[in-house]
Length: 391
Image 1 (cartoon, rainbow, N blue to C red):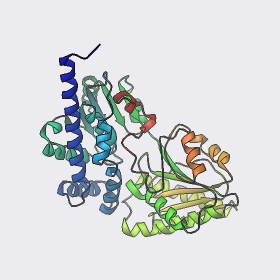
Image 2: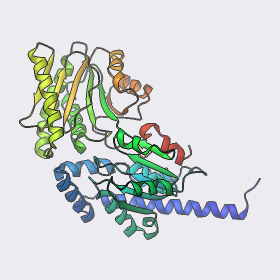
Image 3: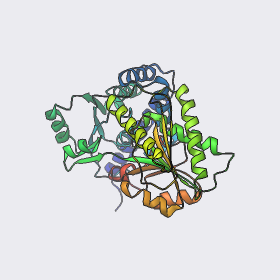
């Protein structure tokens, strides 16, 4: 059956609306990629001051976060058909650990034509409020589709109201936060972790570069997001290449400590880092093949394990494990404790990339790119993307 004039008009109007939103987002992201853009500069300064982060670390982290949001990428996303039965009003409950976390899903929702309601976190109420203000300045109608609010966790009534008025709610946070919502219209992005897999026979001319890029992945956002690097596995049957990479990473982390000074670490997290260090120290004293590489203070920590060990979730703040494995089969065994929770894997080597993709890890990338997933990143397995967009 041929389309009626009315249906054709609706499709044309829809396409114009999508193109307009894509263009508005592209202009807003372009402004926010400029470090001299005053609203960005002021927001980063305020977030850093409140969280105890260095401005330099946060500048580099936001650069990485916004890198994929180019005009071409947004147009490509706009060119994908959105689902006819997609939600028209979507709520977002933002996390406080990473400024801007959720921006991929928010951009997709807006391009798909949804109205977006964002509840910011008490720990970080600034980024989305300021970005929404920029979007409204670029295009008033586009900005009118975004509403940013803030209330404390104690205001369960306001959270319940958000859940009622939205057809779909996307929640970011720890597993306890996600579990507390327990609603059918909620998609939760809970606690997830990321790692790296480095193939056998690292080219000696590249090892410093690889170590530097991995150290950067550890440093950005102070290692507190789902894309942050916790554990590096190196296919190294005799362990020498893995140990060398650990040593080079420690040097790179020390250099980055000058360029991006470490955060003011909360007491609880500082205690967790000390526990990790002391456990490694005593294991080494007991004769186990473990080496502790550490900065003065708690600026960074690298723990090298010569023998395979299970994936270690870091307490954050630049604390990373490097482990030698004999082969990819041994690597798979090491990942068993975090099966289903790996969000990203930085890889070096074709075999390692094939392995990571075969495991169904949502984002596989080169070292140094962990905080810059593409717009069509299948975050958490891709449920949200499948609900909103066609193939």
